[in-house]
Length: 169
Image (cartoon, rainbow, N blue to C red):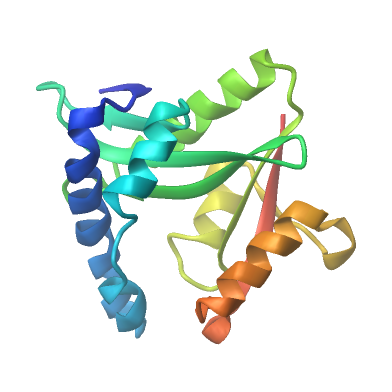
């Protein structure tokens, strides 16, 4: 599998990956998250055209995972990372994160951030134990991350505990 920039014709596949990946939230009582619609094609096009959408493709060059990034407070922020269930538990997500980390370090950036659910096993615990992230204490949450959390709260995501996380590069 290889990680590469997303092609424009692959954007509908990203939506399919998101829907499939979201289904696992039903098993932890978060059906609202499973039912949430993926980013629109317009939103995905923005990420693709600005070079901030990456896919991991299988041997047939079909996307099995994707990640969207944003620059936030001088770091790379992972806005969304989703792996299709058929490709999960194979190190795909971790490889995507490592790919982004290498690119960010080469660009002179010193960290990657994300926001995620604190208690969902494949969210904060996964990022901490498998990907080198740590939960940021409130005093270390930057203005850009505070704005992201504010928007997440407006969307109702604070119904479940969420955290900001950082991976130093």
